[in-house]
Length: 458
Image (cartoon, rainbow, N blue to C red; front, top):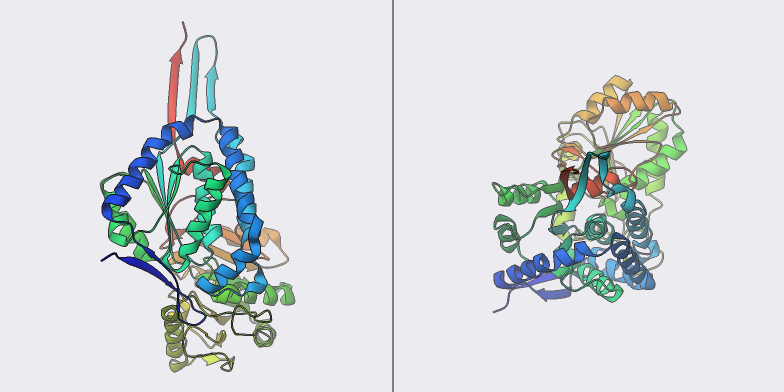
C-alpha cells in the first residue's frame, strides 16, 4: 500500500489534494541525481543562472489568480489579497540583483608575487523544508539564492501546501532549469531525517516549529552539515507616548490579524504607554470589529479560516485559559465562527506574562495588550520571551528607537512598521527562534562556503 500525504482544505474540511510519499529509495535516488547535476550547474556562468531564476519567477507571475485561488483552498487566505507574487518577486529579484557583488571573490592581494583571495563555493545539494503560512515567499527566500549560488535544490513543502511545491517545479523547469537541479519531493519525517543523517544533502534550511527544528538538528548531529532554522516567534510591539496612535493601531493590529494571525513575524504581544493605552485599545477593538470572517473564496471576506482545525484549537485553548485567569476578551463571537477552523479574532486585556497567550507562540488571530509606564518596563517585557525574531517600536524619536533596539533580544528591530521582511536585510533570529542568515548579502554567504586561494606566482 502506497503511503500518501494529504492537504485538508480549511474551507470545508475536505481533502483538497493527495500525493504519494517518496519511498526511501526514491528519495535517495533524487538526492543522488541532485548531487550528480550540481557540478555542471555550478559551472554555468553566474549570469546564466541568474537569468534562469528570473525567468522562473516570471513564469510564476503569469497566473496570479490561480495562485490566490489555490492558496485559499490550501491554507485559507482570502482571494481578495491576491496571492503572494508581490513579495515572491521582490525577494527573488533582489537576490538576483545583488548576486554578482555578493558572490564576487574577496581579493586580499593580487600582486606580481601573490594572488590571495577567498571564493564563495556552493555547498552542493541544498534541502529546503518550507512552511505553509507563506508558502511561495518562504520557499523562494532560499531556493532563489541557493540556485543562483550554484547549488542544486531539493524542496520539501509542508503538507498543507503540497501544490505550491509542484507549481514551483513546473515554473523552474519551464524556465529551463534542469529537472535534477530543482526537485520537488513529497517526504515523510523519517525519510527527511535519513537524507540528512546519511549526508545526502550538504545544507539544510528549515522553517517551522521549534520541535521540527530540533528534529533537523538531531538528524544532522555529527554530520557537520549546516542547519539554518527559523522557528517560533512571539513578536512584540511597543507604543511609546510620542507615537502616532492611529498609525500604530492600524499597523500593529493588521500585523496581529492578517493571514488569520499566521505570520512568522506577526505581532503577538503589544505594550502601550499608559497615556495612550485606553485610546489604543478602543481603536483596536473598533478596527477588529470591522473584519468579515468567512469563506476565503468570497470577495467580501477579510479573514478566512485558520489553516487547520488543530491550529485553531490551540489558539482557543490559549484564549480560554487567559480568560479563566482574569483576562478580558473584547470581541464577541462572530457569526462564521464554527468552533473549528473559522475562529473569531480576539483582543485580550488584563493579561500577564503568567498566561500562555503572552508566552507561547499562538500563530493565530489573538493579541494581548498590556499597559506600561516606561521604556524600561517595556523592554523588560519584550525580552521576557523564549523567542526573538522581530520587535516593533512606535515613536517619533529615531535615536531613541535605535537605543532601545540595541537592548532588544531579537533578529530585526522595526520602527513604525512591523510584519515585513526586507530582502536587503538579513532575516535571522535568536533564542528559540533559531539561527541562520536568510536573504541579503549574508544569505548568499550562508548558502556558500568560503574557499581560500594562496597562489605564489613565479
